[in-house]
Length: 466
Ligand SMILES: Cc1cc2nc3c(=O)[nH]c(=O)nc-3n(C[C@H](O)[C@H](O)[C@H](O)COP(=O)(O)OP(=O)(O)OC[C@H]3O[C@@H](n4cnc5c(N)ncnc54)[C@H](O)[C@@H]3O)c2cc1C
Image (tube, rainbow, N blue to C red; front, side, top):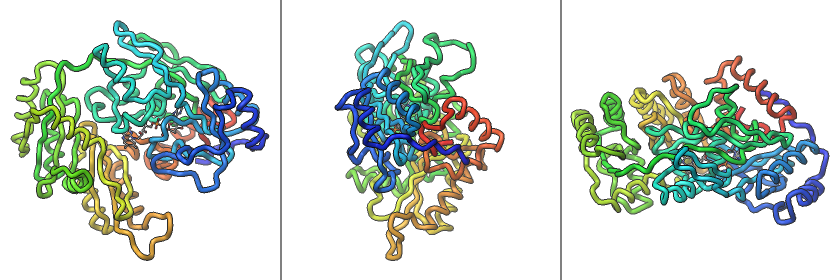
């Protein structure tokens, strides 16, 4: 998309930093930010990109930064914890990186209304830790819960392990406090579970990757902690068989809280870097969690679904072992330090998991690329990894062409199966080249007009997501 280029900033970075210090304080501005602020987990700004880091302490500080950015025509890159995987928080030249990391207050926990009001910089896991003594939890749990912020989760509409049962971030957000590009404070949504007044700006801001407004706080739904949980490990001969296992669960009355798939190559990789012994020949596992009342009934229904589908199911009775298995799942694969590795994030309707696994294998073989997959299988969201060994003729800093071509075919296959180019990591800069595969010209044109309505000068996260 050819977005309107942001107008040229009217201040040098040094003058901008000085003005920011006047607004939000000496210790809240850095002209020489630590390296971590130069990108997210995957995408770094090119070496030498100059930017100023602003670390306001409260919503008024965020408003002051955005007012100044507006007056000086300076682009702004909002940032949570920088745990993103698609480049959304990577700075652009001359930008203010607006980090929300100091907005860490949990303003309110209300058990009767079943809501919490949380500032954007609260680490996701800290919210559930604060809720636990009240017998409650916040359901969306990306594998990065201990790194990511609530604001970042809202901005990317993060998914996670328990989203198959409890829904992704958007299903847990009732309202937002946000600041528009000119510094205007905006409150969207409501505190009641229901509410239909006006256009749903809350849902529009969720997943907007910092391009429409800066989120400073969210009113989120909280839920009673499940009375019990039970972990089961179902082992299948292949990914195809495990995909059939997911279909068997869909046909059954039981809805596991989490259904995570790890294929044979992934299990071998986890074993190699963590010392576990999960891999057995080339089998694939579904790691399942049941929660709530009636666990014995749920277990019986699950076994009745999975065993005829060919699974060998083990009930994990020991809580430490169960927690260790989930920890291994969250920490994921090895680093891929022995070769080039590209991690993908695609989703398909869950009945199509078998078809996308078949496509993954076929594409990998055709391009000579090793493939493996972890999947939030309960909602059809896959994180395939594609890798090739380092070669002598590798161009520095570039992934080999077969790897890129294989990834391209895989993303196209997901869309053809009725899926999407990104299940949960967002578009950022990493996935923009595929936007037209999924969005029609009419949809993209409308999104451009919405962007302009929110941010007429196109200062917020320019060049990202849209
Ligand atoms: C090990 C690991 C596992 C992961 N597992 C998952 C997973 O299971 N599910 C999943 O969905 N993601 C996962 N991720 C990706 C990442 O953690 C999520 O995208 C997360 O929501 C990003 O949060 P953050 O606070 O780090 O945001 P950042 O990376 O700082 O920013 C992400 C995007 O949101 C924007 N943004 C951030 N804060 C705000 C704000 N307050 N207002 C407006 N815009 C804002 C940024 O501009 C950027 O575009 C994983 C990442 C890692 C490293």
